[in-house]
Length: 277
Ligand SMILES: NC(=O)c1ccc[n+]([C@@H]2O[C@H](COP(=O)([O-])OP(=O)(O)OC[C@H]3O[C@@H](n4cnc5c(N)ncnc54)[C@H](O)[C@@H]3O)[C@@H](O)[C@H]2O)c1
Image 1 (cartoon, rainbow, N blue to C red):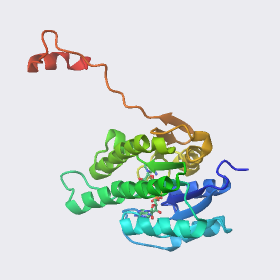
Image 2 (cartoon, rainbow, N blue to C red):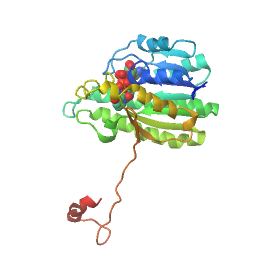
Image 3 (tube, rainbow, N blue to C red):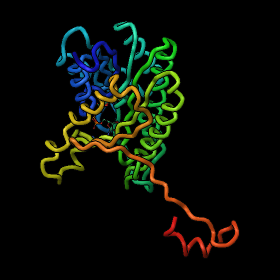
Image 4 (cartoon, rainbow, N blue to C red):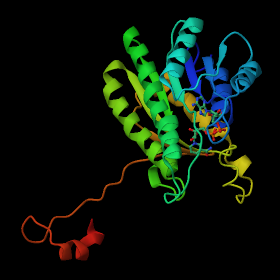
């Protein structure tokens, strides 16, 4: 018995890196899988239909379906959902993991790169979560949804402004979805992974043993839990996973302060008391 026995789950970007680890772990946990991957280059361009098919073949058997739709388009998302329903009759959960990096520093950033990041990362999250949520609500079925942000979306990243903006947007969208979908017994949680993949290999080049310390499989272990009935009461969480270390990310607003006299701040008092806020 696996914790995902009988569940039908869509994994986007499931052909490589963290998504491939998700796929292998979800299959081991008993899920019926739709492995979606458009097979893009690291910058999100191009299309290779063999990428999803290779992982489906690696898992083997009749409980897995490969799909190469582009989930940044409504047509792609709808075709993916229809393919899943045609094969398995329903969908119980989603891991929206597809992503890429195609960024430039603000002074060099152009509309095309900005648009690609917002579209491919944030709009794909909007479309995938909405499609799966509508399907679940129409069936009156509970479900579990995971989206994927990044520490760069939380803290920002020099040279990565559009990636950061899109990944930050994913948190706001997913938390809103978790509130709206709670009455329908649908959970929405956000993974913030750090793993050694083709996307991060260049920036982790100086970290000794990065490939061993930051295995994509560690992210997948947490994803299996969050997609399982064991986590049916957890929603709206942002979960940082770096190797075996798991940490919840909370917003940490300061306690705040009010002006010493009256209700209005002067610029001078704001300057003097800035460290109190
Ligand atoms: N690797 C990390 O440390 C790290 C850190 C923070 C966030 N992330 C996020 O985790 C996710 C997975 O990253 P990874 O490092 O495994 O990358 P990866 O490049 O190894 O895999 C991502 C996969 O997504 C697919 N993809 C991209 N656009 C797609 C689209 N429109 N439709 C369908 N498939 C598409 C690609 O073909 C690729 O196979 C991404 O969302 C990434 O932003 C990764």
